[in-house]
Length: 522
Image (cartoon, rainbow, N blue to C red):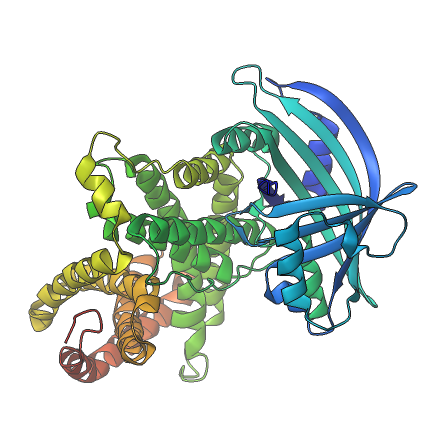
């Protein structure tokens, strides 16, 4: 039996206005466009009442193409970093009714039958879209990419959600060629890598998750396991970071939600932590350019996050304990204005084409395995070994770094406390990355302690940061007079709190040293 065809697609979500800009701009320069057409598509997705196909990673749909109907079965529908590579079997059918006998792939039929069992299939949701199609050919390498610009909506019963997406399907060529076409098409238009396909959107809508503003969602758990090689695990972790960076960027550009800059900084720090933790397996210098860009973006996003923390956690949190003679409102107004200025600067930076270049460079690095050195035979052995070996070594190395700071806890300067906090962050990220490889009952208490220590040292750092940012250099004499007493109170209150909490923080660290290291064999 011949192998079932496997399509490779890259899916990007855009705002409706941005997608209109791309449609009006037309096919990108540097490609010949062999066909341009616009079609209306209505697709009906089927499943059992318990959504057994979804659970099995299968989608089954009927799509109306004018007077024709096409039945499509996809197996392996997961999307990672915007990329999907399902097995796809398409067959014309006579009308809007399923015809499972039309599936002439024996193995696919068995997989489908096993997922359904004796249950009945029925319509679950549908999509209605207007699709503009460009069939691009790159004269440099003869790669062919079909670009589909989709606008429309997903409908599940009475629920609807908008759909604005660009799909790049690889017809001939390599994944780097696919990414090149996407980079050339979107230019500086902000996007996020789609976390799911259209079927996934429909299921989310069914579950009541398809509406609402775009927000910087909390990072999804990294799904590696002991069967993964070091290289496979590194790819999975990087794809997760890539998705979160792109998502946080879009959130910042469309919302004032403080979570946006916070999640952007976390995603960039996780990316840099992954580069560091996997360093023994990577070609020397292979991550350098990406790491530098991530560091610079994190610094710009961090300035906004620092001002948000200053406004919300350092100043506004004291509203209930401030003496009547001291007014926090003028200071809060001043800090809000500064935060707004920083946010505008961040949005300007994130709107640049250089950020799209960074995202596509990272995606290319992930999919083309840019960390490889073909001449290094030792590297090949490390990349192919079980990830648990590298994980144990990386976690041990990071713990020793944290412990070196902890051994001098009472002597640490403010900058050194900040360095210990960063070391704790990397330890926590490493625990989150590699935790699924070890027994949950041993990972959970260690992770909780890392989170608590990070919070403790984070507060110490926030107070130190506040002392630097709570200045009156650029304000009028009147504003300075109004804010001076409030600044003195805020700094004094938080410094006193730090001093009172330090003994318990110290004891917590000493206790943490006694708990088992989950990555070490007994």
